[in-house]
Image (tube, rainbow, N blue to C red; front, side, top):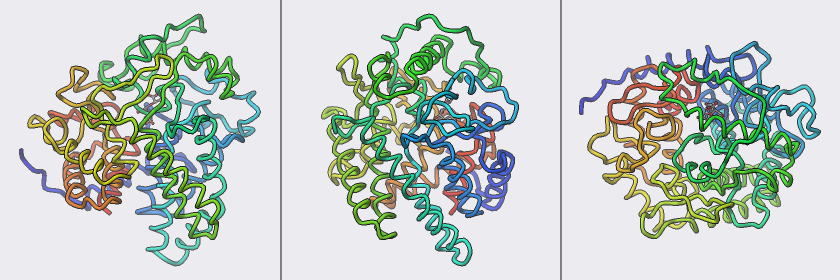
Length: 442
Ligand code: 2M8
């Protein structure tokens, strides 16, 4: 394998330029054409990257997202910008305008995404303190002022989406997982039969070179059917739970909640909120245990749970490494690191770079060019690297960092990469890919 000579200065300047071009003023579009709005978990990674170069702008990013938070505590997965655009489904199709919990005058979707935000807040706070002066004051003021909002977000997830306290978050759409068309969702989607709904025209396939890199039309019809069902339930969690055709306990989402709750507990403690810190530690412990309980003793990978079918979901996807994100039992983490670096994953001999593909190349579900069915996603490697460093596995962190920087040196900042050739796929100039480059550079 040849190694690219890294020009760190060029990579940094190019990444900053991508974020500048995606900057809509007070929020960053996830990508210039394909995703012209603020996506929830994308913007958390964007804030992590921005904090490396502009702490006040990173704060603005998170503040904008909180401006879209519902009265329930939910942070919606899209805050729509008011620019004319070519994205579908837009605010009209979501139909959240009449929902009382939605903030007045702020157009949003009606579902959520994984709660990486407290981790982003931690990064903003740390960068602000490193810089000192006005950055430190701004970051600390923001953390203090926004703490209740982040707590409300975690509380809503821990109650509305885990009412029986199993330590696993229930999702009602694969868009909530962020892994839209992953093989993780094939079994639950096989049971979803779209009913009558208004007609629609896809727009996403216009913005990629090859429609084969995107979900299929059959998948999209199911995505829109679930939106229709949730709209009919007025986006009320209890009503949705009673009627929606897709109910899954998402292990990776749950792992992120565990990690983020631990981080938020630390921040709450720093700001003299011991009761809130204790609550978040308890949330972290509950979801960490929930994640660990899903591990398949044979494969060593964590599994999602199809609630309607009462069955485990166990294709070989990167979500199986949820315990590495959640943290916890050192033996479990050591076993997971061994699997991750083994031949089925980072150590697979055909990979262009030793980075985990979204589906293992040895899986029958592996599709090397198709979105969440095989390609490597740079932001996800950053998240894994962060968690791995947190748990003290410095050599693995360094391996992920080196390979990621080599991958990103092509300066396309692609949404995802073909794992065997390294070809950039999906959208280019994707904001969270640029942010990942800035964070890896440090
Ligand atoms: C993708 O999802 C959106 C729907 O939310 C889409 O395909 O239109 C996913 O990769 C998701 O994880 C990501 O947050 C979003 C924006 O980058 O794009």
